[in-house]
Length: 461
Image (tube, rainbow, N blue to C red; front, top):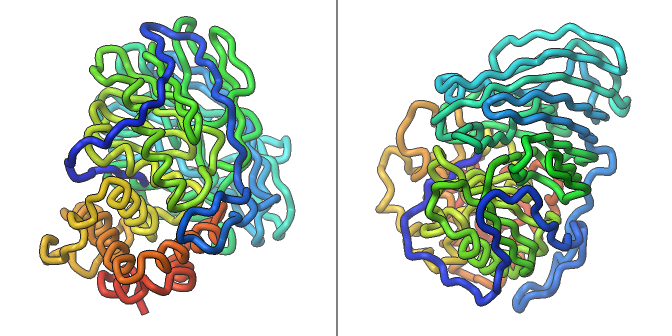
């Protein structure tokens, strides 16, 4: 689902913002002042004449309430989802991504312990490790309430979005994830062994996420803080596609820049949370100027062991050590617009978020020339940017074929008329905010890029 194998480049310059830092165990993290969330009127940046308001979130989006307890490798929880399908359905489908091949290989497990639909117990089946099917039929527009109990055993050393090392635990896409795509139906593409490239989800309103943990630990999680005690964090968010949670004895730094930023670094890692927070604020200034307002209340970043690169979630990033020294941090922040705000089916169209996130990092860091030469690409990947994850599974060259080749097409298109391209891209973001976009949406809203995207195989037909 999410990958950040970025080119190794020079570190970004820091701003002069002075973060607040705290060393050692920090059971209480001050809550930054939240920003307004979209849809909002964006500040007009020079050269961007239109599309200043994001499309509104679907008022009938699913509503999620969840409660989890984290104890080392063990996570136990419940979730309640109120779901109103826009098409008639004959079943309910959730994805259990923590049971995918890579975490399973490293001792990860996910079980569903109870299922209720509209208050009545229901049987369920698992036709594959990551697919949970629940029999239920209903017409379009009929709300249904699903309640699930689940457990996780976090893997160790998996280089993934689930893990545990000492007192540090983390999981993202760890709760059963509703697999609905509006206007399409259930997304049940096979799991992949590619790094973090898997899940697809419409936005949901996070009504309440409650995380219970041991005293002396800090939680960094999706959503704005509603309340916090020595052993409990409660968050909420208007519109997010998924949820990330990290628990540990983090060293914490906060910056109130263009967006409130909280960074936590795992004990034993050399990263400076204050430096990462400053760099995050600097990157966000550039991204906001190009793309529009930051779509979430704030951003939290957990720097973790056993991860290479970074993994993006709405308003949250799981980051490996020293990844602020290359393009990864800027890349993951770009994903807040491309995957977070404008979603995509990451199994069917992985380029729709990865090419745009790579494009955003290249502009922000001034490295466009690293991506625009087709001759630098292996012949085996040329013209294959738009292929799904089922093609890339087990094949080399996914990063070059999707990230680099896709970003190169966008950068070459922009070079022909930067002002018009930037304006069209802002319109693409505004028109497709809070929904799952398709390649056809790109062709409609970003006509300056069509020829280059067809050249690399991102647009077909």
